[in-house]
Image (spheres, rainbow over the protein chains, first blue to last red):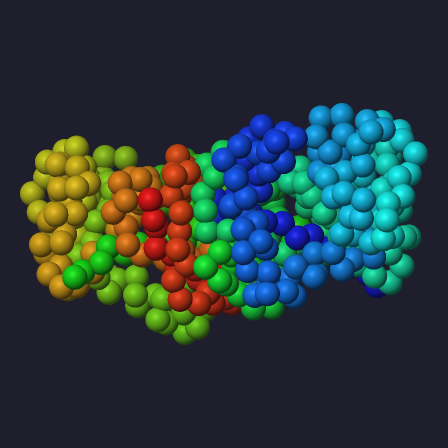
Length: 199
Length: 199
């Protein structure tokens, strides 16, 4: 049976983005690429982890991850990722505004879901078949799926930086424990930690 | 030259204690032993880490770690640790109230310092000689020493639990980065991560 996975880059003080995310600052003020430097500067050292991020058979993302401000329902906007997004699979975007599906090059199609997280998960499971479904982000969307007990494998990529303010991954989730899975690994720029959330 | 070390048990969401710490709840409400379960349930698996916590030549702690409420200047109070505390070395307690030094069995002496964190560090370095000085806690005291750039080695023991509220280790410290030291290790109850804080 397919699992629901989630990869998140997080600071050591628990933030997944700085405050005031915008077109210029998709990860918020003060982040400045610090959470994902390992992917940019050390791609060979993290080949397996980077490939795993886009290995799922279907993806779910919040509208803030798809685009800033009116992104999800602005017909001019087709995501951050250019003509050929790295997903190569169906991507379900949570939004309150209806929009026709948006097919991109390379197999990615953005489908806009107004029925809520569980409806998005149902559609994504159907699209993924035996493959995993990945909750792609952002922080609020992952928080929502964690709160609902719907994530099977949470892969945290903890950058050795402190953001001090912004969006916290775990806000309001005190009743969840996390079973460690596998072994942690670390370089100077990141520590990879995998957990199974348990309510 | 002796280093300044610090061992802290922390939840995955960044808390080192729950709210409302008291005589009945030294780690605050909702903690219920969850941050330090690894020390109680798996002592043999973490022998090196547990021994390292009390290996320093001198210790510094805040008055809330020494005792609840009026602890540090209540002459009836001699700490949480019984007649023979596990430090076996000089312990400098930060407080605003003067009190005579308190010798305990086994080589621990509590000395009460009213001159602030840097004065306590000066005294502890002098007492430790070539051995390390450990900042023993609690969270506010460690936060203060991190803010002042005075900790050389921060050993985090991250429990796979979420507390949701309480005392955060890194509040207000966004301008610090952390260089990873050594390899992480993990069991079901804790992940050990060591960092060198860099301002």
